[in-house]
Image (cartoon, rainbow over all chains, first blue to last red; front, side, top):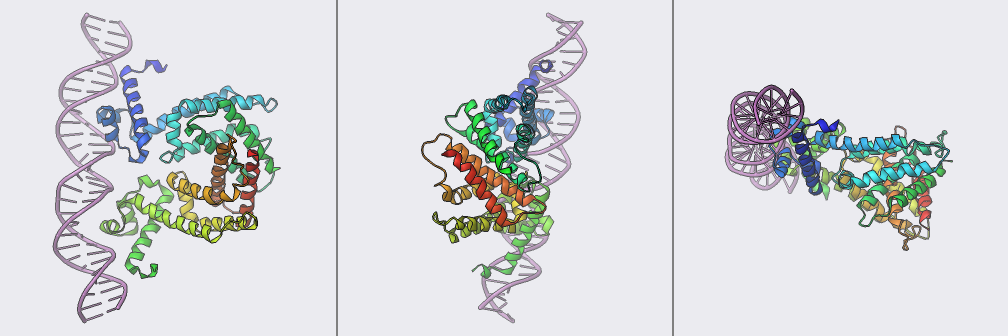
Length: 191
Length: 191
DNA sequence: CATAAAATCAACACTGTATCTATTAATAGA
DNA sequence: TCTATTAATAGATACAGTGTTGATTTTATG
């Protein structure tokens, strides 16, 4: 279906994206202007406005595609509380996706990144990866649970960021296991 | 010494800060213009440029004051590996400071916040609060230590943010203890 | 009260935004 | 390959906000 899109559109959008990624390595998204971007990729400014309303909307559409890919992986790997092995499978898939889009992810998670995106990602992780752990988090009226939950969630994202930015990365499998170990270890404090 | 500053300057700076805090509740710093700010507090635009070069630099100076207050508290509470009670004292002081500047902190940690500031704060926590725990983090060649460290650090910041945003906050003392418990519990995985 | 300094006002050139219309070029489908 | 369609371009426009200047007014302090 996405093959039906005019080649010219595909081409210009791809150029714009590549250019944005290149600019995001150097500066914050808030400092990148439409003019700068179209000059970077040598495209008319009017053409940009033909596809996007502004830089933020453009970035959002890139983020949306990434999120969709992640959502898709989550749907394909339904979590089963009986069999723990599926936890690792899902975590591995998620880490693989993020690793495949390393450049964008590092930019979005970095100092010039987009907190709104990070929060969307956190929410997704919270609702899925953590859903599998809800039976570990004893959600009975322990008043500290929300805090421990937050510690765990932000901890995971922070660890993933560290991993993506690392020179020589550990394997996806190793990280999935470490992640699981850390979460389980933290969750047991709610008991 | 800060009392020697002309009352007019104190007044305008205070007005500008209050205005910026008000605007930051509604929108991202990148969307706030100098014009908008000076209109919010009814001050001439030239006057703004008399004190700051732009919005970012203004925010930075606010952040600097906060950081200075935090640094000061850290210096006043030297950490002693022998006596664990001082850990709680320092943590309590830090939480108290952040709570006193709740409005700014929530804004800076929130979706429209400033990642650079968050990273500065993380670094400070890492270098001080965690220094006391270095003897817990076995820093021998365990390859996972950096990841566990990151998990812990981001987890702490995330938990503090959750706490600051909470409607009915737990006491500072309670949070300091919880923080300590979480860190210690995580750190033992490096053994 | 005098003086020094801060705040204001109006004007300036400048950069980037968002939108338009007419024109040119590339594409998909018959 | 031809043709209708649609994307991309160039150039123009009104508009927002920036950062700076110099002259003037207001305010604070000894």
